[in-house]
Image (cartoon, rainbow, N blue to C red):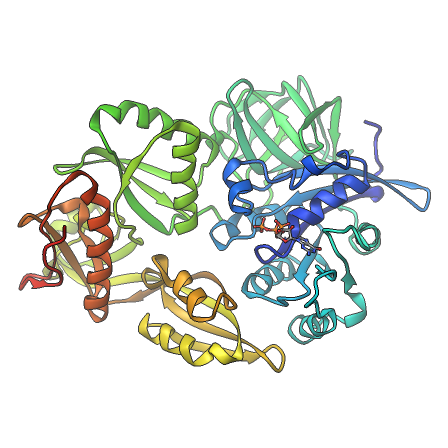
Length: 556
Ligand SMILES: Nc1nc2c(ncn2[C@@H]2O[C@H](COP(=O)(O)OP(=O)(O)OP(=O)(O)O)[C@@H](O)[C@H]2O)c(=O)[nH]1
């Protein structure tokens, strides 16, 4: 690959609400620039995983370098594809750190949705250039004018800056590339400076080890260089560098301003931590500001259906987590379910996708216990404080829920939720939010028919079926996104599950006093369906608190 001067490099991402057409637009950009051939087989090239193709969602971000001649100048355009679902928003923020601008895609029929708002603010706060693109103008119900007005009202972007396209048909897509060149500034960095490379993603290859995706903010890197990880201080020798087209294509060097990959004998993805800075041995640099590390929000116990499968499941888990460092794994065991693990996920979809990959890629079926969120307890018992070595503990396993007598305060995680809905569903949605103990923070009309609501939710109230309920009571029209909003004090209790009269510790859940009946029924039912597979008749009861308020009778 010839060398590109920094002023002819552009690093950008495409961000959008789920299904608004990021992957389709990315495919078209790859085709126009000749990166991939124009055939039907190339549908959504950047969505590599099988689950991504099946579900039509992007789970893992992929990048590609595009070459494009505009007005006689050759440009190198580095595209970083980002996932759309809220569970994976940490991937969006990490990709954005490697960019100077974004294409914000909005569906011409659906208009601005909850994730459009969340993604816009991520890009805005990172001070990136934003190119608004109205997609799907070929649809019968497309109303680009209305969507442009929404963009102007909510994001303060003038209507004439919006580009109307059909990614599916290819209409006007070339204009988007030209806007990328005109509106997004080249990266600010210098090849003469010492190497400073930001790790913004990493994958594991069974033959070559860790492949770290990097954006170079200074210097250059090539085979044979000795590099150091600012985070782990470990030293490596570079085996290979290259660009992504979107498959890895080795090159002689990578220069400041470029985006590409490096293979340097790292054995685990944890060695190439997202947000880490790589520099040359004996030429240390000030590390780039790191990313917010991925924080598990949902925990569940995982057990093999048959204990003889334990070792197979163990190795499947090890291999799968090599590629997904955002899953946390701790060993666990249970009298009823045997030896297993407690896993932490970014959210419920992440948990489902992980489970589905275990089934599809490793042919494993497992028992997953009811999901729980990370609660906290401020301990008052001197004995427990000594035991834990601290006064505030995080509880990721209900079996370890400390008794009220030894606790001065329980805390639950909260999120700030954004809901965008046609106005006719507002009444039902407000009732749903109140049922889930949510507190309204804001309500804004996006246009004469659509409303954006902001609510502070206890995380526990939305992890299980909130999204499905919201969708069904709004005939599929309301959208939802959320961001971390810290902890709040909560009146929590542990609900034991009695199996044939005996409590099964691993099936216990933590619930809020106000949501007893509703939660208890829901959990007892879902747990029954988990364990009834192997038992002809089971007497399953949810028991709350010491007095044992019973919630459900026998289930067959
Ligand atoms: N009619 C029409 N359909 C489109 C257009 N662009 C995308 N689609 C369709 O919209 C659906 C979603 O498109 P994707 O490109 O997968 O959307 P995405 O934003 O990448 O979705 P996630 O990866 O899940 O975030 C697919 O069925 C596409 O074929 C368009 O311009 N016109």
